[in-house]
Image (cartoon, rainbow, N blue to C red):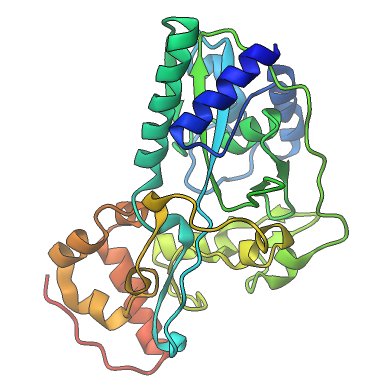
Length: 308
């Protein structure tokens, strides 16, 4: 067992993966029972039965093991002095699209495992809605669920991208789980300006600034043009987490804190040239322009629109 685990950890290190584990399938199955009261509740960006996100056999009937892995994207970029006049982009959209980066790292990890275990089949998933990456990560011992719903790793905090690999390779499952270490801290709940978080009710995604910016809703997003980091920035586990570990997720300050006037003026082609490799690009130029226009109206600025 230790030899197998050492191989997995070594493969993760080679691939530039910060944390890895094999999900406990019995633990994962328990999530179906836990979400029973919320079976009919809507989930942001997801269609279908909620229980399907935990049914790995339905996703791929050859599944024997589930590998969960995490990559830190905690970044530290100095905002401009007159920050109020600039928009903010969530850290998840810094640098290269994390879907591509994590898939690339997963393939490297898997190639190392093949050298040790021989050929096997697999499916790599990165935030594609087919399976609950967070439930798999918890079941694999990656971290615990914070009160904001994020998986929190004791060392890397919650600014971690999660990937999931279904495989027909038999691997030893995780047997140690992290209990919540939030204690009596309610910082994430208190700091959310829209009240999207609640200890008892849970997550009201319609109120979440990240959701609102991705939908182009005309609301006060506290300067965010895409995503939101407020609840994570308030978390004590992110204060001392290492920063800028992966060059793929680095960003220049003018990309992390864009001038909304420039976004409106640049047009769709220039927008693609500037943000085409970022994970925010999937929401499209029109959404980011709409958010920029609304921000400027809040600042009482004149808008010079670029003709499409």
